[in-house]
Length: 124
Image (cartoon, rainbow, N blue to C red; front, top):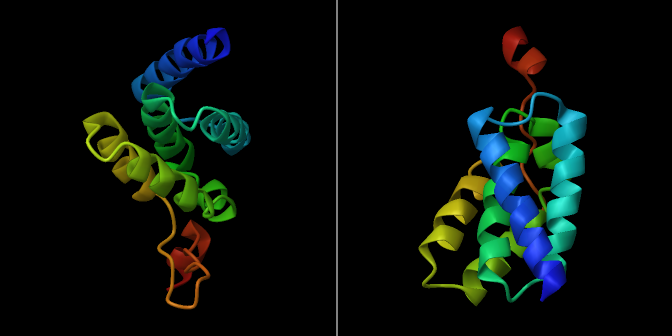
């Protein structure tokens, strides 16, 4: 229980900082945070608080960092698992929606749709 409590405290602080700053300024920091969050979410699958805050933090990791989101599009499965495990937990469901909203949409072939970078958008 001590490990999950320490993780909960850390996630609360990270979620508060990310929310206050409106995300992570550097994509390298966003990527590192996402990797830590994903590992914790895999480790503490039955902890609703970790799953809820994990989804919130992932949303901020992907916010304005399309490269990070594209590289980690497979996290959708982990987010979906959190929702299945806690279907009545409003924090999990809402934060999962936030995280999903910043991931590329899956295509029908099982891959993911490539999002356009800002430089590609400017050329059009």
